[in-house]
Length: 237
Image 1: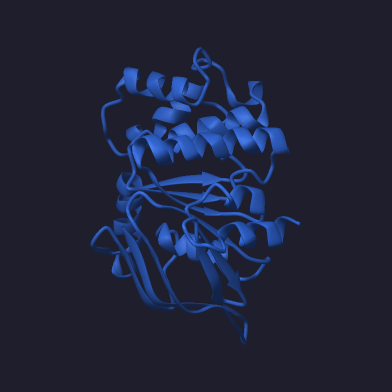
Image 2: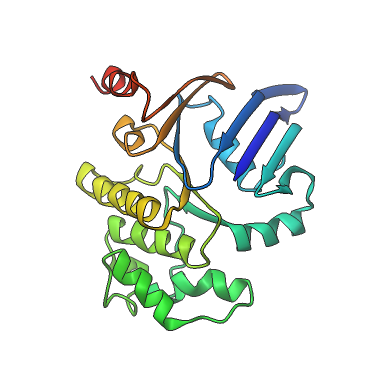
């Protein structure tokens, strides 16, 4: 589904050059739920932005479903994002002047597609917000806003869903609700998900956990690995 080969990313501030990613090889299979973890500054969020075409690497290649994302222009990447990629952010990023229904339908409008009300209402029911379609973001709790954001990210049936700290602003109970929701889309619809998180509890929902450190992938573990449970308990202790 997505493949990063030898990816580097450098940022220049005056004369100072900071290397954030230092030759990353990273891939995600179709239908896989991958969690990326690591301390602040380790490069995990930078990689997510590159995978989503929000930025381009300094070096290396990023291929999304057969397309060379790294070589596309900003305009071309914008089109790919609208059609192939769903985003969920920590801060929800709902449009305050639009209703819940309009926020969810917004990606379809942006892509010039017809809005099918039944599809929006189906997602509203899936995210447990049936009857909330006419409400506005300020009338919702943080957890409800994040559920609207997830529905918005999935309305165009993206090839991949990228989630950057989706539970970062929520308490444990609301976080569990959001993680259960992501897991249901992953299991029921085989949605491919890449999630950046600081929370090992959240990472435990994934099929695979990839640990970043200082711009490199330090280690990774699969759910079916014998040491998966030991890996989780070591960090959650």
